[in-house]
Image 1 (cartoon, helix red, strand yellow):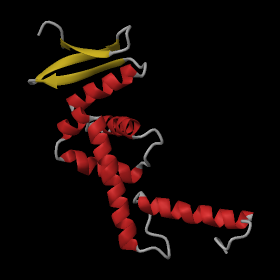
Image 2: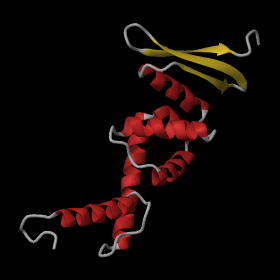
Image 3: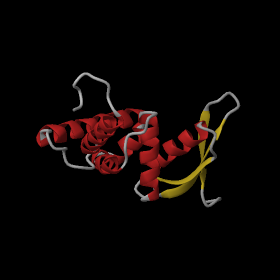
Length: 160
C-alpha cells in the first residue's frame, strides 16, 4: 500500500505515477476525475488552472489578447484543453497559442505583429502582412544591434 511508511517498491512507484498522470489529465481537462476524487472539485480546479493560464498569457501577450477581445478567453480555453502548459511559463504559452491561432487563420493583425516581434527577439526572422485601415501593409521586424526588436510598416503592394 502506498504511504504506509516503509520503503516504496517499483510497483508502488508505478502505481503512484499512473494515479498522478490520471489526476493531471483531469486537471488539464483531458480526462474525467480519477476514482476516489470529487469530480466537481477536480473540474473546478481544472477551470481555475486554465483561467490562471489565460490571465498570464493575456498579460504577457497584451496586443494579441486585446485584439481578440471577447474571443480571447474562449479561444484560449479551447487551446488549453488540448495543450499542456509549457514548462517555461506564460510567454512560451502565449507564443504557442499565437502560433496555433496563426495556423488556424484566427490570429488578428496586432497579434501577428506581436508574434513577429517575439520571433525576432529570439533570433528568428520576422515578416508578416497586416491590414490597417483596410489597406494591406507589409510589417517587417528585425533585431537591432543593441538587442531591441523593431517593426516597420511598408504599404503593400508598393506605390499604393
